[in-house]
Amino acid sequence: MAGKNKKKARLWKARAKELRRALARLGAGASAPEVSPLAPKGPLTLPPIAGAEFASVAAGVRYAGRDDVMLARLAPGSTVAGVFTRSATRSAAVLDCQAKLAGPADTQAGAAILVNSGNANAFTGRHGQEAVDALGAAVSGRLAVPVERVFTASTGVIGEPLPHGRIAEAIDELSARLSPDGLPDAARAIMTTDTFAKGASAETRVGEVPVHIAGIAKGSGMIAPDMATMLVYIFTDASVAAEPLQEMVRRQADLSFNCITVDSDTSTSDTVMVAATGRSEAPEITDMRSSGAQAFEAALGRVMLDLAHQVVRDGEGASKFVEIAVTGAASDSDAHRVGMAIANSPLVKTAIAGEDPNWGRVVMAVGKSGAAADRDRLSIDFGNIRVAENGWVAPSYDEAEAAAYMKRQELTISVDLGIGTGCATVWTCDLTHRYIDINADYRS
Image (cartoon, rainbow, N blue to C red; front, side, top):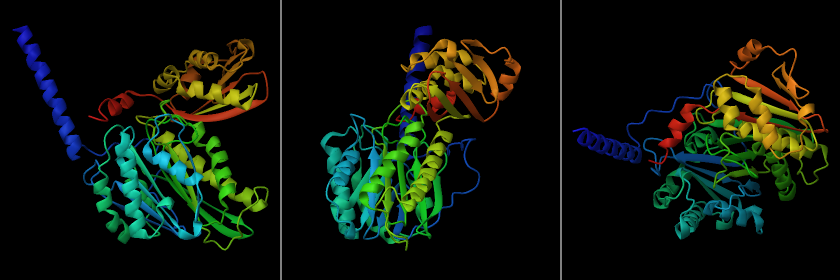
């Protein structure tokens, strides 16, 4: 009898799993995800950017009842730059964007960006490139933009053919909806497991003329950058030549997106693109050394860092936002290596989730990082609390005080290696059981 009951239990479990899969395919029966406790307060508002228009629609790529495709149209004269994942299994869309940005560009023809959520169009063989080509041709024909200036991206499930016909059928509707005010809706359309739409903006002056920057991002899981991370699209009315724009994007990605991690996994689809429409009256930026270029890059960096922090704040299941500041390293690269070793450690992250000031796990992560370190010069602080120094627990350390500090939503862990002047700051979140809940059933 016991064997028969076990068999029935397995059968019901299998049927339940099939039902969950069916509901997922239909987009039914699933409630909206609980918004991260670390999310910014209030609705997302972003300023319009002259020369850029946006639209979003529900094409039914994977989700039902929500927008899942966004289109951006960029005015003639726009320059575009980008950095992308270095994953060996990167998607067809990433490869296509990289090839187009590396080739000659007719900036006077304008440009377009098409992004879908729900399906990553990655690891799909020949079908992947066919989908990219078909969508590029559809956008090119509808917007009269050369196909070489149509950039696509996809995010979602890996290994399933992209139903690009559904997206192509929505191009006319997207084109009709294009609006300068559509960027917040576009941010919502590119979400997957995100619990809130991500956006940031800034204003600065170039040659005493105001210029504006606004960007959106998606990202919650599979976040561990390698040249770029997630999907990020930033737009500005500044006039910036292609070469300096590309260099600015690369440098600022290294200081923002390449300094965050949620779960140590690098996506196949990571993309950061910045488009400058040149519609401001400010003079064109051609010299990286000019004061205008420096002001613009600083503002761009603020937007990129804000978006990067929002991704960490929306880390799957996250309840803590954690800054890890490393100083005293032999080099900046060693400091970054130590910071990421701490940020990616499951033992450190689960201790943070449990509000346990387990500084021994920080010591472990420093030691395994591969960076130069000296046990007896190492010091560790949680906030303003010195917990370890000179290779041992600090004489002033108070466990109760540290435990109370760990209850905060936003934490800082500082590590000084005591052997040089190298420094770096990285950001991460804790690792909770909710992360398992989200990812155990993501595809099925």
